Length: 403
Image 1 (cartoon, rainbow, N blue to C red):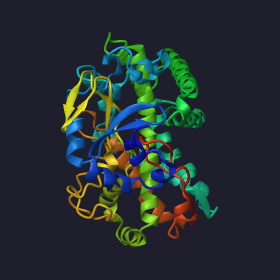
Image 2 (cartoon, rainbow, N blue to C red):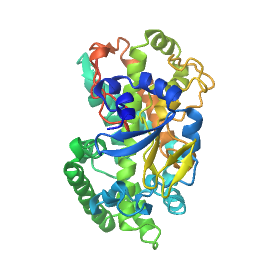
Image 3 (cartoon, rainbow, N blue to C red):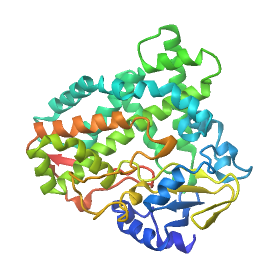
Image 4 (cartoon, rainbow, N blue to C red):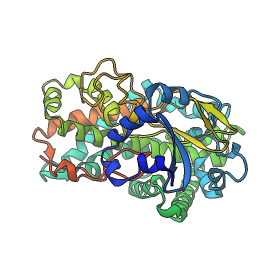
């Protein structure tokens, strides 16, 4: 393991609890640094400054498609048939494939279509709060932050309610880094996911419905615009991205409020600040810590460093969103921060398609939570809360609250 990995151990449990001090050192000492991912034992470059992160996300020399890498590259070797079946989506594609895939689903996520979901999102949030209000305590993630967005995206896609908990298990396995490089559990979950959707697609072909899955099948049948493997991958991406971001937006956002009581009181006193508050939650402890991998298809120079062919580069969105060159007093949580040009949803052509939906769900969920549970507070010492493993998803494992 390189000295850099020891010096900047992003994967250590104590770093997971609060990665900001290490990121502050990296921005100062090594703003683009080569580390070794301990889960895959492969090198990964990490960019931590805001300007570098933005530049990386718009640099077309890097590829998101592992199939374009030289043979023998570890990332290419890991692309088994199963992983390919759930990774041939727009987040793992370059133009023109990316453009074609994104165009096919973008109609479902226009601001107007998302705004039409407001009554349904509000109704689901009320139902979930009805179920817990008399209990006086809950794990906020389990009882509220998870079921809200997963119900919304599953309804959009046409996934039956009774199958939604199964998706939580599969996605948790697939996006959690493997221990000691053991890919078997991830492979198994990917295979089960693909088989499930193949069965659901067969049902929809026989009995079309007014849902996104039926709409995507109709597109697929118009010719070669969406292959079967692209369709499965698209469903995987929509389901995972469609709930993971919002689960952690709500969880991290409520955690930030409960650990900053003066900001919580400001929002309670003036609920119209919710949109600005959600933007600050996204900046302060956004749900996605780093971008997904971009690879150098051949040797590239970036920010004065030579990236060897086949090696990957990540932008740390969390580090960039705490860059003092972009955000005055970045460690201060301020729900009225203005301007707030955070990059929690990414930047450029891969900017999160579901950002309007995540924002809608976050604003509705958090305002309703504060309105209906006026005595909401943490039920555990904040120092004892555990954060999730890995550097991709930034979220708590549990968030016990009392009210």
